[in-house]
Length: 373
Image (cartoon, rainbow, N blue to C red; front, side, top):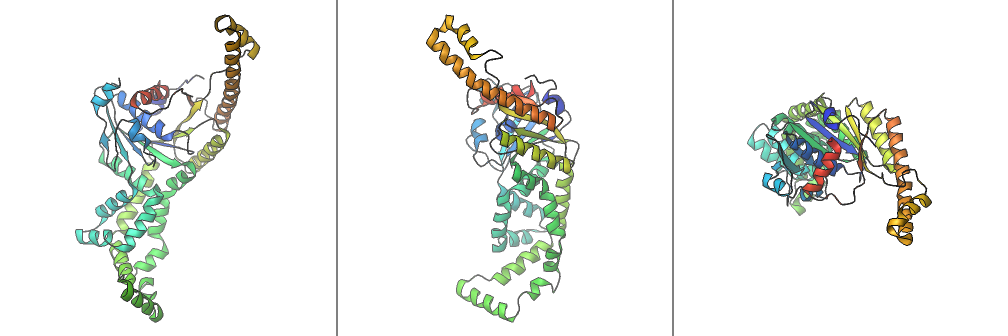
């Protein structure tokens, strides 16, 4: 299956690449391989993953990744035969959603005292764990932070499975809705709900709760919303900035799929959401495509061709095996054709089914060559 338009050409002028699609299609591997391929071309690239399996660190030969980009050692790259052009650098990080949220609070707090009041507040600690656990807003917030720093030529972002990735796309809007919503404004207004919610009966219950547990919920709530009031404008500005970044002409999405029918359906669904949100799709990548088979011959013809060299019993087994692969190859070709037609995508990037697991820099480089060559 030929690739007529190189992926590298489609990404010219792009500073943010977001790999999105269903779960289990190889987005993490695609993101890492693409980052490596771009670094080989002499670009300073950071790859960011939120994949909990931590496959990225092991495939890059790094024992651990954290919430700040770490450079992949050039000596380690050279040891596995990977050479970067002059100026090329590969950096990687694993998103720590809670840590990113805490760092965001630290940046937006008007002063050190306000920062400590929020970070040490029990309501915030519980709420931030729940919010950060969804990962979407913190992922795009970290992306926005890295982009603003200007340290990298390209940032490649791995994302959650597509249904969650829809939440990822809408995360800035939901944060804006919360910050600009009536519910929060009522809480923050002087004499608002925060003051009225504690009537005589509720106050008595909370007072008894505090006496027996030592936890003053009313005080924690009051302190939390009081400190948050000074950060609303900062959150609003950040959410608008993230929204602008996702729609920036230098930001592009790569839709990643495999030929399995369910994955194709989810990819088409996500493509609709991208189009509805007016976000740029640079390419469609189809991983693990079977291309081996009988190549137009019958099983009997292949068995006859191989018999002279392999002998009849072995030739028969090989021909039968190729016939099984031929079924998969036909199915995969039909899936690629469906994606091509439904998405008006004449040249999806095809990555064939490999005969080995992608688990180190050398195999990542092979995938990079398939993506960019």
